Image 1 (cartoon, rainbow, N blue to C red):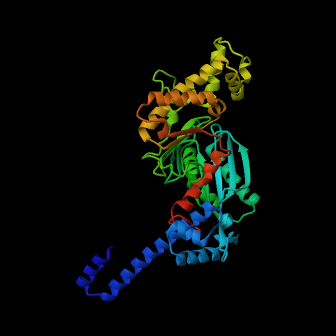
Image 2 (cartoon, one colour):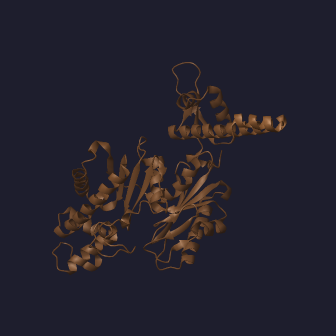
Image 3 (cartoon, rainbow, N blue to C red):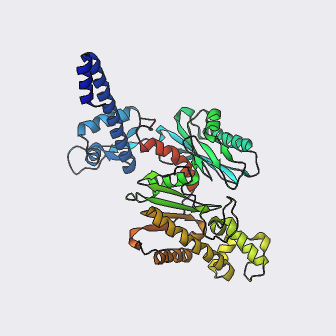
Length: 427
């Protein structure tokens, strides 16, 4: 409510005391919000720089030296920032350096895959305190049993890390399928049909009494890109993952885009062959049928059974590594399978570029990483087939990041802490 409107109320009601109280509360609220917003900005700069002086913080934020002094004093009292020696100086008084205290809170990341549960405790600089991997068959096991295993891994992680529950900012959990993020309900896991409309957030929170965020795996991954991996100038990003499925996470103006029904980024179920086979999702000719690891191995085995010649001979014991080795050695069968997958990925990439017009596209795909010639083939065809954009307009890379899916899970909580003062729980 504006100050002018309050004056109008005063004229109508003749109650000066009432109006003054309201104006004072409004102004205090704005001042408090502005302070927290500025303080979070200061924390982000200290965190980014590693260690920094008050004058340098003032220069980067545009805030006054007095404001920075007060902020640093308050943050130091709360142990959110710590003194770290003095700055090297050519003369005059040496300025104190300050760094962010990454151990002020901890984050637990949990990645629920089809074959295992991975849990890890991180500090706020993503230093790993403890990690565990527990084998599981998500498709075969009862949902209740799988959730019980998740709870046990979280509780074990807390004990092993030697931290108190009060120091934990939250638990980020990701799954390989669409999630109703606001309610924390797993809508569907295509390759684990029993996982449908599962209220995972409420079930886990009830058991462990900690704040929990649940989302699909690619949402966490693209948030990790936003904070730690993508170029600073990147505002619109698509991160494509190809492992035991195909998916993507989308950033628009540096904010995660989930879509109205939480299925944005489900490119694995984009049709690339209308005459193709039936996918587990029920659609026809999805890219997942041609480009993910299990389907590539399946196609190779099928062609070998049909009598195609190849250096790959032992049908029953073929691994992805065997197929990659054969392709690197120019085996015709292995090369043709990867070439078909690449041609379909060209179609998908072209659609993504025209639909989202991103600054950057990142691939997390082991077989593309191991076959750089195939990746170059994809990039060349993409720009040949898409004349609306130039090579210099968009950055496309294939990269491998250790524990990316797990780090993405933890980043769900990290993004809450550092994206807005309203969700930062340690201010």
